Length: 264
Image (cartoon, rainbow, N blue to C red):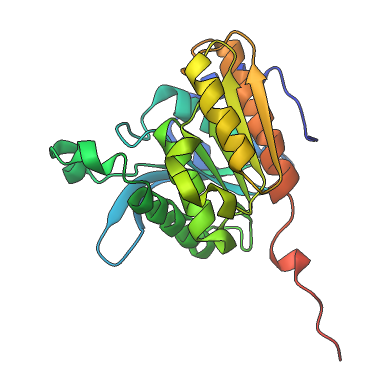
């Protein structure tokens, strides 16, 4: 994998995490080039089908080189601190992000959420719907889209990639349950990176099986000593670095740039 490496990214992301929305949207000083001072961030309602709107937070740095939809387990929300920090690190690397709740507020409060959070077909359709919306609504046209899924969100990401392959160009699973995508794993075409904690025995077995089932370009990376929560700062930074490099490698050009030029 190729891409920039930044060991100071975690510190910068933590500092920016407390920045107000108005500060993040303010233009850079004249002559300045800092993406952190010129990027757009706003709360959004994402229409993923004719009847469902999902809450999200979109941030697009100036000169973004791709867009990433981030979803954790469907029993948590975009307010997950580790997921929010990962989003900040991606932005520091020049990637736009959409932090997404896979369930509506009403669904989160209902008993049937227990069944919904393992319905990979439904959650995958919602991730694909978010990618379709991003391609229409991004302030930077024609950017490629990737999926970042953690825990059960990984199953949703891979299900979406298998069922709507034209909407996504790269997938990363962090400490995830790629096995939840089940029989559709061999249909994934997007290059896929599986990130697994070295101390997560069950996760290692699950991800090795998923890696074997995937037919797309793929790589499995083991983070020494990490559990499936990736609780240490250094572990989280390493995950974001590897994932960001994967996305930059596979999302680094616009769709329009690769379209064939028509003849005379």
